[in-house]
Image (cartoon, rainbow, N blue to C red; front, top):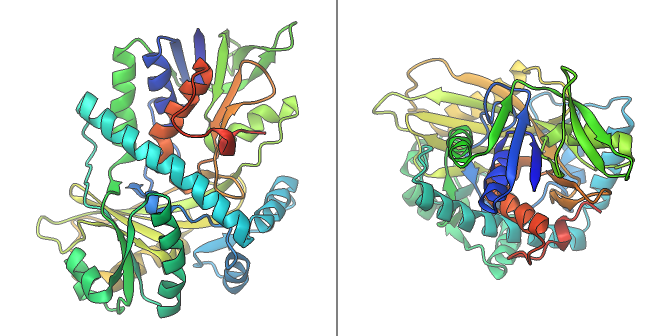
Length: 416
């Protein structure tokens, strides 16, 4: 079949690879001049099956109330006259029950584990290099109560195949010695040895080159204006901003936070809302006392990944619609936390600040599969776990297009 993939981020490029592997004629369309230049550009760098607990959990409403109005809070909700924001917020609250949290953890974890396996196989097959490290991910805690609350979730993840193992404070410092200099005492943590880290943009661009070598066509610098239907009630083409229409047999919408805007005219109410995340990339001196194990600071909702001679620090969530402006206060809060945890960090230059819109569903479970039309597929809504779920999502999507039985149950991710 001729398949048009809309979006050249991690999810779009991964989808294109697996579709091309099945022998389809694939065209990828993106408004940017290269792959992974928006949400996938400077994310946290983690392939983290251990981060399967969704934002929507029983403690989330109380945490949100505690942080309300604080510009430097890990989660910032900017109330807007936006029906989509209010609708998403109400659905988020509905996902905060214990039963739904457990269900969502299991769905996220199964896809994340499948994706980590696919990534490893792809890396070996294509000999990809993207500043990857396979040293695991350490969740550390500086608050005793938060550490205790994390243990039942870690036990649940172990039950479903993610070896997230509790560690004492001393064991955390053995795993990552750079934390020994922390001005904030570490009280404990959990460690997942099989998790990984790496530069998502480098990976996506390397995989895009492999796709092109396999015959995938990339139309960069082409903004998508809309979709068109034919007389048979199916999609008939992608209309570009310049007026050109590209016809295909099937269409895959992988536009991240912008996916709902594209499908809304067809009555598809996709529960995806942009959650603005921030990252700070710190160039390191050669002898810098920077971490080499990827870290998650759960209390402050930020992650740390060593990418060669750079330290990527990313996180927080700001619900402010499609605003992509950088808030200096939020970036300063991230930098302040870095200095407290790693006072001997030696940076070679000023940190690079970045922000991007993460496509979040209320329960953090992505939408993957056919939607409304026989030839329309969605692959979006991965929130903070786009890098973690990318390869598995692309493979699952390709299986569904081919009519094959996927390696994991696709039901939890169906757009309906």
